[in-house]
Length: 468
Ligand code: MN
Ligand code: MN
Image 1 (cartoon, rainbow, N blue to C red):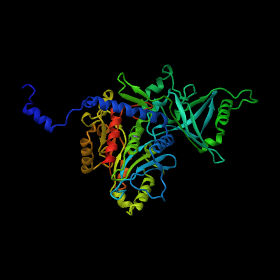
Image 2: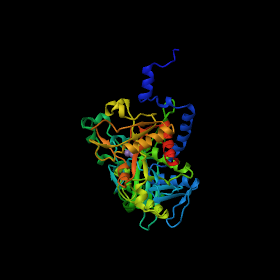
Image 3: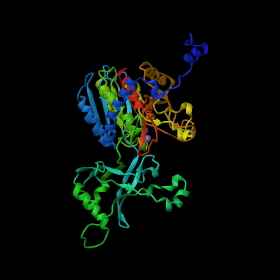
Image 4: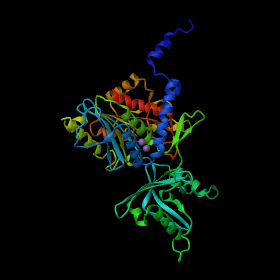
């Protein structure tokens, strides 16, 4: 009777939280499904470095799944699927439920902007025979990580005549890329002696874009710059003044790759927060005839505080829900007050190399499953909505019931730093909300890392939340 449990073992099993074995807790079928799901994610990530592209890709996938463009004047019946784009940079995808939004909507909200390097309004200059762009970084990034890597230029230019030109330069193999230089170690003693926050300043992030003068020129004034402008004019019909009405972003030009001998991880640019956006999108595409109307909302500007009319602080989603409520004969604010939300955002995965930044018992781990952050914020729980025990309990039950691998995660040890998500802006609309997403290693770096099984568990969580 060697396999009979002792009383202590039995008690331990009944009372204590079980230690996670990571992917070891999953069946090989689950792991295979995760690997397959992530192939779609990798394609999404590669084609969606900036929010406009993420919206375009999402809408294309949604249309293939039978979604149509939302018409505020049309009336919708249960099972109808609509998408509603806000200024090309955010998109709401709704599956109309049997009860509409009368008892509230189910919301999964992720952001599709990621830290990057934006061009200044007047970016192009020439110095010492080189043409360069002045930039202003977007979001919280460690500036040194963005030097000496190949960069690609994405964005939109509005010309004086009102036409839009979309720019994409540097993605294709064989196409040229751009780069921010750094000082060589031999001459970097002064830089090395500075604290990291001072070693690279924002004004140092100048991007190399050319070095040959305009050929056979009659004078010598800024010919390298002129040559760059001539190339841009030939390809895009733009002039230097058109930079003034443009949104141009530099993002890493390397592609998404599997990481590790076992290919268990994915490295790529912009996991924060497309790694939650894609599973939330797929959950909306896959859910059929839910009870409550389900809305996946992919929002912009989270990395700079959710500001602006395409960010989460905008009334866009509120108005959309008001419109849906009107159709159901319900007051918009009542529909909103009964709504529940998963704020689909990433958390920092425990990094054994930087273990002291975390509190191991409350940190999240790669392969531990989808991570719930009851609160984010910083020092003394400032700037967070902090989900209630009741709502946390509801989500915990949902995950356990559906056997979705999950874990709890606090963002780093107390008083070290912190961060926020869109959750608090959703909470301000009187909606129950909690953060649920994927653990990320090297968050905000040009090449971030996530686990394939965690991505799949995020999809399962959003799907069951919608389908419940
Ligand atoms: Mn995020
Ligand atoms: Mn972020």
